[in-house]
Image (tube, rainbow, N blue to C red; front, side):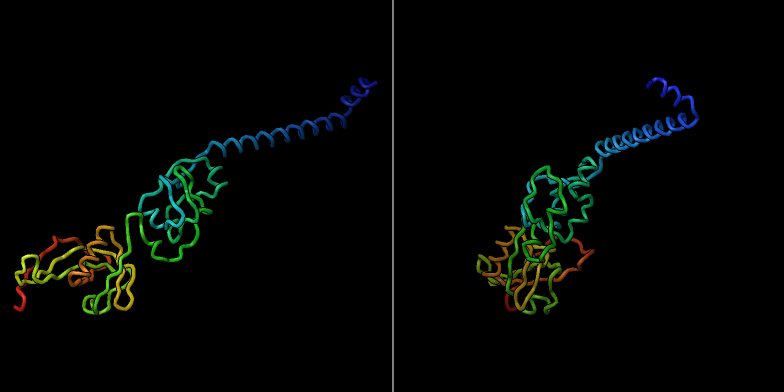
Length: 232
C-alpha cells in the first residue's frame, strides 16, 4: 500500500513540487549549520593583537607607569578570547587608569583589571621612583612659579667646604627633575631612591635652589661647578 501511495505521489505534479520543497528546506538547514560551523571555526582560528603582562603587575600600579615602563607586550591571541575577556588592544587605554587587581605574567590586560586613577602621588611613581619633599624659600622656588608638572634643575650652595677654605661653592646636583606638586614652602619631587637621599642630605647641610626649565625642548648640558670667594 505504501509503495502504491509513494508511486502516486511521485506521479503527480503536486507531489513532485512538495518533494522539491522538502529537499530545499533540508538543503537550507544543512547550509545554515555548515555556515555556523564555518564561522565558529574562523573565529576560533583568527587572531588579533592584545596587551599581555610581561611580569607581575601589582594592584595599584598606574596605567601610565605600565605603559611608560614597558610592563606589557603586544601578543597574538584568538579574536574569540579577546572579545570574550574584554582584552585591551591599544596602549592608550591605560592612560588615566590604575590596576585594581594583581595581573600575572602572560595574562591578558582586560578592562576589568583597571579602574579610574585617583591622582594620588603613588599613582605617579614607577617601581624605582620615590616622592621626596624639599622645603624651600620663595627665591629658591623661582618666586613661586614652580608647580605640579614643572621640570627643574637642582643646585646647592656650600660654604667653606671640607677644607674650610671660606669659599662658597655653587654646584648642580641634578638636571630635569619632575615636580609632582608644590604647596606653601614645600616642593615635592619625583626622584630615584639615591637622588632622594642626596636631596635630603643637601636640604640638611646646604641651601638648595631650583632652576625652572622649559617643559619641552630643553637639553642636557654639562653640569658646571662655580666657586665664589665668600664675601667677594
